[in-house]
Image (cartoon, rainbow over all chains, first blue to last red; front, side, top):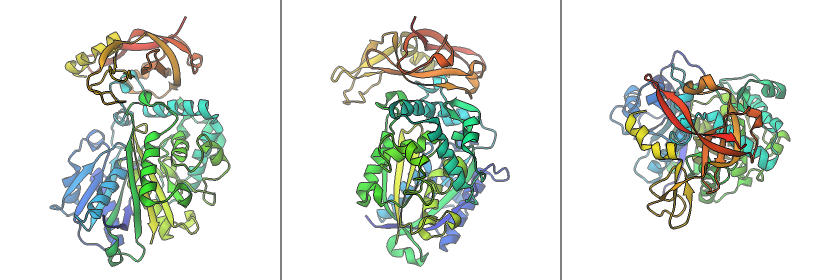
Length: 382
Length: 130
């Protein structure tokens, strides 16, 4: 396989973007990535998207997006893995370049959630319709079941959960692209309205619109487009039982652990080599479980590490410097690519007030459903 | 839900039928074509015990449209003596009564009224064992 680099990145702000359609969000992000690299053509496009069909009634996004980018004719298709669609699109684009089949490939993610759809219902289609959704469970409900199990097994507290939200809002307040740029206090999080006990509103990522895109090419050609290429050192993906009830330990995200192990192995790196990471904090408990599955902390210790400040900018392993899904926003199909963009900015040294000093190696962890699919990437400054 | 789909799911929903792998003994709910543990093809139908214990639980405050009238309502993952795990609502109790390890009976109940024609959909809910 050839070595692959990211040579351009573009993304829209995340939020309630009433004046932009699904296709507008894609085009804005894609043009940003092309301009960033000074590229004028593409060999292929991958569009990560969870549910254009249900959110805005639009399928067949491959040709739609190529057409609206002024690139009808270019091979283009959608990649879906629920909220891990963006990470899956990046992985598909990586392999297309690594294989030697194409040189310039756009990996993108896009979602338009604020267009009148029943968001709770659409998101629930990423869970098992027959054995879970039928009985009245919601997505916050699934993560609440994970949280209860984690609290019982490891003594994780409500303060631990709230500390994740406080930290991510503090980071997100520094991110001009973030949906919520206000800080929140522990008391505000713990006093917000209940969504699915013990998870409250301020433990939950918001409903967002947004698009994100990165341009990939062979590392040997990267300097044609940028003087700061970021190498993709590894990609790892794994799946687990679809229904939460079918997992041996509901407090452990085994697909995340397996995806991470594959990525660590491919990169010949371990968790202590990572300088900065973006993890999938769709709910506060998800960040704690991800930290443990990625081996950034021992099992059961993620809450304690978060409260001790180990995961803040300036801490031992800064997590979600972008503000994470909680503060930056979570347009589900775009999230995996937006995570990669935050790491690209960190490794280029362009993260401004959020910059992690001397960051050279970064990691992203993207997740679908209640953890049934997960994609992990490792990036390196070259 | 189109009626053939509903009809297909009746054995699991009405009779609480799961599947047992004749090769390795793994029990699933509902049944499957292939054993998730050893990939043996062809699970045997097994009637699950109508009781179990709570493995983890929550209370849904923000509910899907079909369940809004019932919120807040507790839900739990319940494990039967055969080792099958089910996602179910917990009924006939206050949300605070649900605890880890709580012994529950699985009772046949109406789950939801679906769609414009209001088709009644049945299944099982957990109730604290008396």
